[in-house]
Image (cartoon, rainbow over all chains, first blue to last red; front, side, top):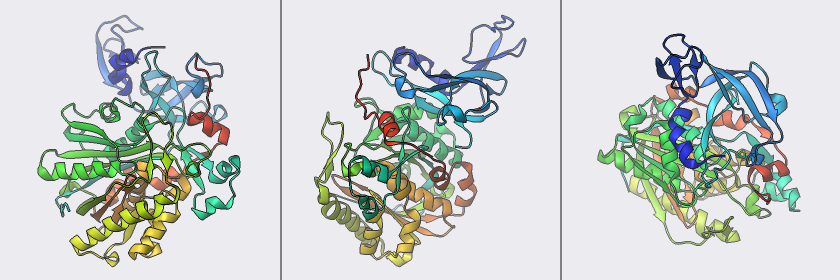
Length: 130
Length: 354
């Protein structure tokens, strides 16, 4: 659970899929970091990730954290977006319809209400052809 | 009448229809209605927004498609309007959330509009005036709703979810130019929702004759009188669609043959998307139109009022159709759900949150 103010501080980064690319080793991290998690370099530049990608792996959550009951079952996938790997929810499909290699596209959706009653909007992914 | 002949037009348009559908007959059976009631108003199934969808998410999708088709820099958009009667926040604009998510500059007018089902078209009218006056280069008007209906009310057969967006701008960049726009509004208590009420109330048969038919007929006749146009001058006529039957009926009253009205009808397959209803019909027509064709669009909102808008299609339409999902594609991609799933998605089940 979070607050709507915390979501607001991150919204441009999250909604625009802003990532950091390491100028030394080339590793791309989303959300962006101050230091490269692979080589430790501080020489990073910001770039937007592509909005279309591919499911690398996924898991199904049937007993969710408090507040996420409306969205259960939750499909959480590791998605390859360009050179980055992004962990995000896949929507508009049933668990039996998800597959590794499925092409997906970013879309804006709401997620669990914040502790102060706000409505957070985040990036989720849906099948490219739906 | 605003006569913006050939100076202002539609630069881009976009649509959104949620993937989920429920059969109208399943809703009818849930509440013990006669099966024939769905045939009598011509409703087959309706679109249902998922649990994580609302006016903002659907409006964002439609607006993004409009921007993709237009190919304009979001920073050049000077006004954003969202017409809705299902705001996620009672106080806090939806328009600013959508605009920021689209990367539109902070230097803009931005507000949510409310006039039952025609607030989105009011947004188009305001955008036309702003562009025409030179106050802004582009204005974005969005109609988006997760329509509410009291469970068990006949309105539940049709009340659905969807969004449409129109980017209004200079005529020389447009896929269709505005010829004339008129609006006819009165105080008519046909449909309303009081502050704090979860669901709207309506005056049963009163929603038809003194409300829908009177206002649309009056607005369209006003447009004909002021512009000199007649039904035979139009290739298509699109009306607000609370169900499948009303638009055909009002078309007949105004002298439009069935074949000019049918192509713009979407409600029997997606339900009444309230603020997106007539605007989705217009989008479907644009996606199938040819340069030089003339379209009449007449949205209606309870309370009550109707607009009548005449647009002429330009040759730019052909190159922009394929840049975003079409209404027909969005209607065709669907997953059927049960009444129980629909009740969960639309928050009709009462449960303790903590």
